[in-house]
Image (tube, rainbow, N blue to C red; front, side):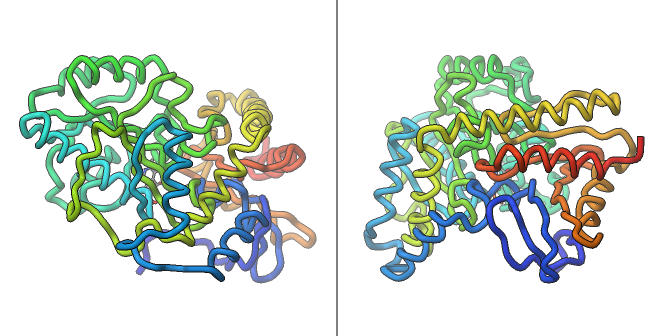
Amino acid sequence: MQVTPRPPLVFARGRGSWLWDSEERPYLDLVQGWAVNTLGHCAPALVEAITAQAARLLHPGAGVHNERAPELAQRLAGLSGLDRCFFTNSGAEANEGAIKLARKFGRLHRGGAHEIITFEHGFHGRTLATMSASGKPGFDRLFAPQVPGFPKARLNELASVEALVSRDTVAVMLEPIQGEAGVIEAEPAFLRSLRALCDAHGLLLVFDEVQTGVGRTGRLWGHEEAGVRPDIMTLGKGLGGGVPIGALLAREAVCCFEPGDQGGTYNGNPLVCAAALAVLDAVTAPGFLPAVQARGRELRAGLDRIAARTGGAPARGRGLLLALDLPGADAARQAAEQGLALAAAPGGRGLLLNAVRPQRLRLMPALDIAGDEVALALELLERCLPAR
Ligand SMILES: Cc1ncc(COP(=O)(O)O)c(C=O)c1O
């Protein structure tokens, strides 16, 4: 089924920040599977962890204990300050679980309140409920009727949230940085105001950290910048570093699931949990996050130089989740095409870019990209832009 336009290339192998196609042409990858490959392609520590676990035990089933799932749950609890964890196969499923948990909490503790205030342009996944929670233009009509109960506020406008709070409200849910919308930051002061608003009304604050979590913003969690704590947090993408795992984390007082409420065949599968443990080992090692911040500053400085030259706005985002507007109606899409075309020249090296919007590039390289790779990425990017 055709669900996304794909370039006429087949990628065959990868290592770190590099991908090679079936013709052995190399590409510097600034997309990394849509911000998934935290440690780049085929990181040795990740491959070793997966290989060892695959040889030991793949899937005893979600109805019994295994060695890796509690180990990962405990690690995540320690790192997040949230007490309990439910593992999923994707970010959408983690958010679906967050929605169910909040609704059940509302039924038990808030007189049946079930509405979750979400945000215009937010993105939470592609199940029916998470599409309904998303504020992506067009999602409201695509598979209508929507799942009800997701009134939309405007990001960074507290009054728009306050106006939607009613006795039916149980939670407020948002991304610390709206990634799919084009890397639009929830201002730290706005997140702090939301925390205060939720506390004043007894609402749950839910952070969707599927894209921003696990070091992407230069801190372990995207919300750390604001110094506020959520009641519920969801993870996906970068947690598995390339294997499909998501997680729903919550404070003890919110965890009201009982047997039968939630589950899934592959939840907490030891293979994917072993991968996530290897990713967390790397990301929490001394020096890792400072290096993400340093590479982020270098990449941003280069993007800002391009913006100054083209007369565009400065780069947006944090850490290694950055975006750059290019002047011209379809300029980002054309730059992404040009990035692939660079590899076609004899001895050429391509650049993998994501045009999150026709005019906006989103950059989400491996978190352990090297300084010289950042410099090369900027050099290649210059060659993807329209002639001066
Ligand atoms: C913030 C956010 N939430 C949820 C999702 C959905 O995750 P998945 O595609 O793993 O279902 C995404 C994916 O882009 C995302 O960026």
